[in-house]
Image (cartoon, rainbow over all chains, first blue to last red; front, side, top):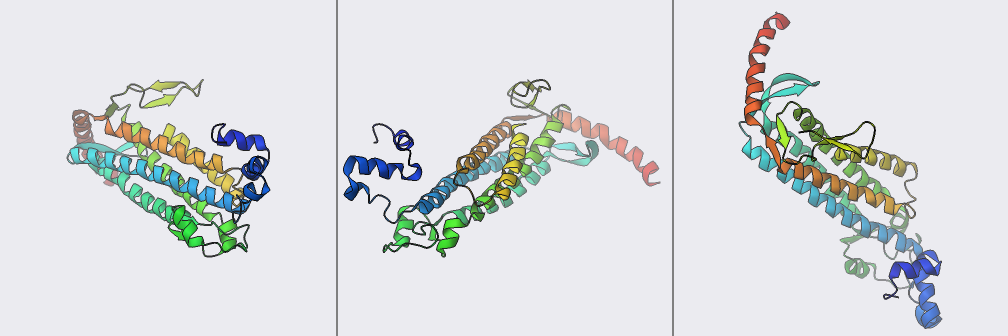
Length: 221
Length: 79
C-alpha cells in the first residue's frame, strides 16, 4: 500500500473514507483488515482530520504574522525621527513620523495573534472517540488518544465534538481580520510609492495588475 | 495587490462557510487553502517591508513644503 502510494490506493478502492479498510480486508482478510476502523467512525475521521489540518495551518499563519510584526518593528526602530506628512482622505493632513505609522500597523497584528491563538486553543481539542455524535461502545481512552494525536484537551460533549464547526469559522474569521489589517498597511505604502516617500529594492515587489490582463503586473519604481 | 486579493478571497470564504457552516467534509481542502494563501501574502508583505527603502530626505522635504502651507491655510480656515 505504501509502495503504491496511500492516496492512489484509497482512490482506487472506491469506498471513500473506508477505502483503506476495504483494501486491507481484500489483502489480509476480514479478521485483521476489518479491525482498522474499530472505534474510529467516519465522523471521527472527518472531525479529527479537520482539527489536525487546521491547527497546522494556524501555526503557519502565526509564524508568518510574527515575521511581519518583527519587520515592522525593526523598520520602526530606524525611523523614530523620520518625519513625513501624514495623509487623510488621500490628502496631506498633518505631520508625523514613519515609526508612528509602523507601530500603528503592528498593534492590530498583536490583537490578531491573540485571536489566532484563541482559535488554535479551540481547534486543538480532540474529537476522537466521539463517533458520529454518540460515542462508542468500545472502551476507548479518549484522553490517551488525544495525547497520542498531539491534542491539548478532549471535547467534553461527543455531539458537539462530532458536529460543532465553529472552530473552523473562528479560525477563518481570525485570518480574515488579519488580512484586512495587513491590507491597511499595504494601502498606505501604496500611497507612498508614487510620491517617492518609499521605494522597493525589487522592481516587481510593489506592482499593480494591468487593466487588460490580471496576470500581468506593472512594477512601480 | 496579493494582500488585498487575499483579503477579498477570505471574505468570500467566510460567506461560503457561514452559508453552510457545518458541512466541511467535502470542502475542507478549499478552506485550508485559504490559510496557505494568507501565509504566502503575509510572507510577501513582510519581505517588502524588510527591504523597503525609505527616502528620508524626500519625506523631510515634503514635510517642510507642507508645514508652511498648513500655517497659511490655518488662518482663513479657522478665521
